[in-house]
Length: 251
Image (cartoon, rainbow, N blue to C red):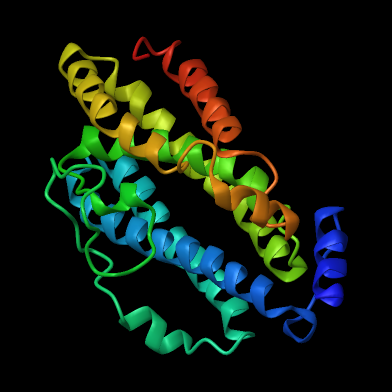
């Protein structure tokens, strides 16, 4: 217990671990949970955007959707590489779930998730058209940017380094979405479709930040796997959403 507490003190004060060999069991469990949620979310996101490529109204938009599809799968593979260091069978992991599986469009936020994987709840909902894909990408892209401020500081150094490599490309995905949203908002029909899509996705993306006053946060903070609270991250996201949608007339 003394050794465990000393490690927790070290991690809570900004210390880092560098290899599977010096990772305590409790830390390992929470680290694997974090990585699984990220990998599953990226694979589910990639599957969702793959289906959106054919919704694209032009070649530029098809390229953007294809790029997001490719890079999210690549990001999942990079984090799976870290999981492999802990003994994960990465080939089996990739095959064990249907990443394209979705709940009905109007399923309640608290509904039982489909497929048994650890994707964020927002990735259990289907994308139904181009405006829907763009709105979801913008809102979730901004959320991912906020979450990256946490992920790039996790106390397992090899994973933090992977997230630092991933972060700029995730930011570019959001930028591609904002460009698409600008084009949609240029016509009355596109603006109406974008508003409807934003109204649908906004509460679902907000839910991905987790419960307020989470009991798990303090434990994860002691392990150096979390820093800001769910409430703080959600507030940052809401500010970014307002700053992004306001100038386009969609806030």
